[in-house]
Image (tube, rainbow, N blue to C red; front, top):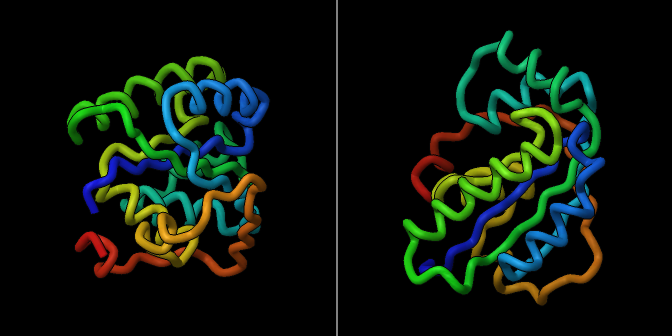
Length: 161
């Protein structure tokens, strides 16, 4: 896939600036789809660990405290303006840090840094590939995803699917 597709996540405790972030994302990208993602609070430490691909229990306890354990918003975007992958990757990095400043805490907003990370994190949360995503019509309403089991690490995901 040669398209510059990324995901942004506004964790529960960053949602007070969700509308502002969404408006800015509309100015900078084509929004493909939005998801309302829910998982049980008691799986949050585990799920953060597998989402970010490293196990450090106390780091994730702190992440739960700063970012929350409740429902969060995932917004899938496509950068149609950046001429190459490295410029698109840099744009995600820069905007993520702006949104974090708006949210008031460093980690309350996540932006995938590369296409590989986007593939992994999108598959982990939805069970779908990016090819599945782009094959669907653009949706105007968010899709709700309820994750009832703890996320698990799968080496297959690291190979870029």
